[in-house]
Length: 221
Image (cartoon, rainbow, N blue to C red; front, side, top):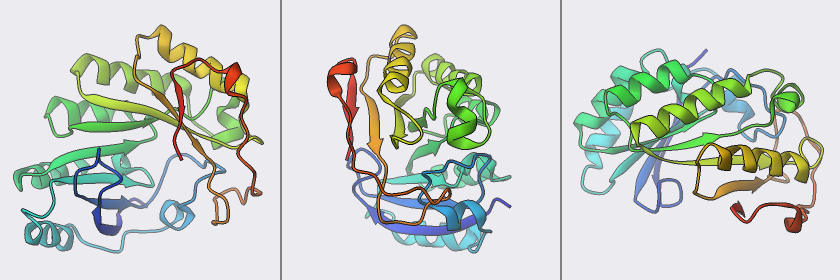
């Protein structure tokens, strides 16, 4: 069940270098084997909106942004209303999303409630089941097209584990983005070793032949 699981009160790493809090929402509509937040994905809400808003009120002037993350933030039933309240406090808002709920993303964009989006591109359609157990690549493209239409700044990223994806998959994804007019870097994040994951994946040395990838693929450690 989706709820507010936790808050990280300060980060400089998650919202383009500006001081921001991260709100973690429980629940997710995917089951990615490399997910390093199994407690959040499988957990329940533990904190009320009012507790979060009180923290944010006290940090006005110290923080500039709020990151909505998870789990999957767009599954939270009151995400639109909650984002409105955060916006009314004067914060910029970033959304981390798996791109599987474009109908919710459209509402957030229509009300101008988000300033930046980190959009996960999980896999080509033929690999979605092995990577995430479920999900549709077409929904990613619906979310991608919405962000392009509304002109909101966003980045596209994927997580790489060699048991799930290979250089051919990454190259295919990169060229698909380029074909759709995406000109920013396509970020590839190495799998996090030595942490519990949803799929209990084995640790793996990051190894990728960059010569097989287009130049706009960028490794983000």
